[in-house]
Length: 231
Image (cartoon, rainbow, N blue to C red; front, top):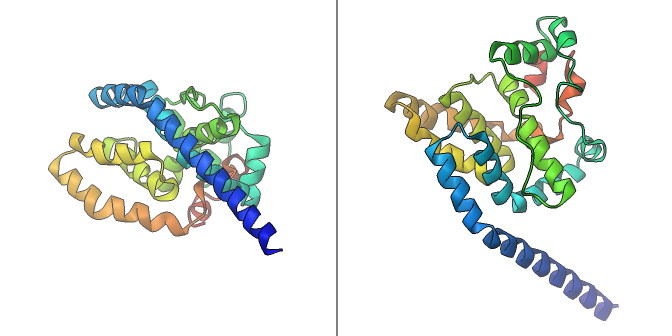
């Protein structure tokens, strides 16, 4: 019995080493592209395609952890099975505009209309080979506007950094950390102090709330937005 147990442990350890070695080799093989995307994104932060590429190429290790975390959660596992997409075909914006003013759906429609955003404008995933991990990255990307609405953070440099720090606190995505560390160079001294003293501590204080990747937001359109925020 003990020899069988040792054999299983040895086999499992070998599998873990194999996956870890493969993951790190994948990261290093992408290093030139990562550096190129990082330099381009730093020069022009409005290049969402470069920011998305940077996220794709640096996030695979954490995407595996997020995928595993979702599989352990009933709603997260269902999201992975069904793979809902956020775009103009799946989000009925005219219907959301008619919902009561205190609902999440109405708040989302107001937010999107105020900033002239489209539900389908998030960049596609291009550099994640595993289909399920690619979907996790896409879901992470497409939920960004939901998190703006629920956090109440504005569409500004300071507001975006607040969302990025919240994303990092919850999901530890490297691209969120990079944005959080580099983005403050575009802030005034006053806003940097607000970010350091108020926004970042607030972001990490949200870790005890619901797992952001395990909420099927589209099923909560008619729910009171303040009640949803308190979850």
